[in-house]
Length: 114
Image 1 (cartoon, rainbow, N blue to C red):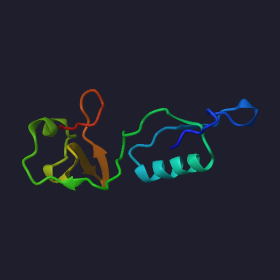
Image 2 (tube, rainbow, N blue to C red):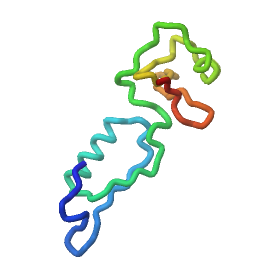
Image 3 (cartoon, rainbow, N blue to C red):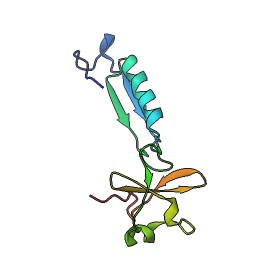
Image 4 (cartoon, rainbow, N blue to C red):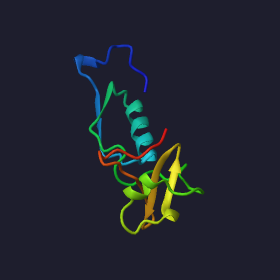
């Protein structure tokens, strides 16, 4: 999103602010919201969090064709098999009941290598 030349102020000195949250990896919805914010000449976007928690956008995640790293296997929920694990750019996720979820580290972030 481009920054407006009028230093973020509309008529009357008011700033247009967009607040987003709970994207949960849904990049299509995020793109639509950011396009709408651009159309509305929003000055600043504030993200309240939960950008990657929950289901992920499955585009680009592919099944792995190598032995599952032990650290990832240890972090998978019970009942998730290697066939359910996907990888994209060194980041791991798993399919559960048709939805893609991130493999979580103990600190809550997505498990990525590299």
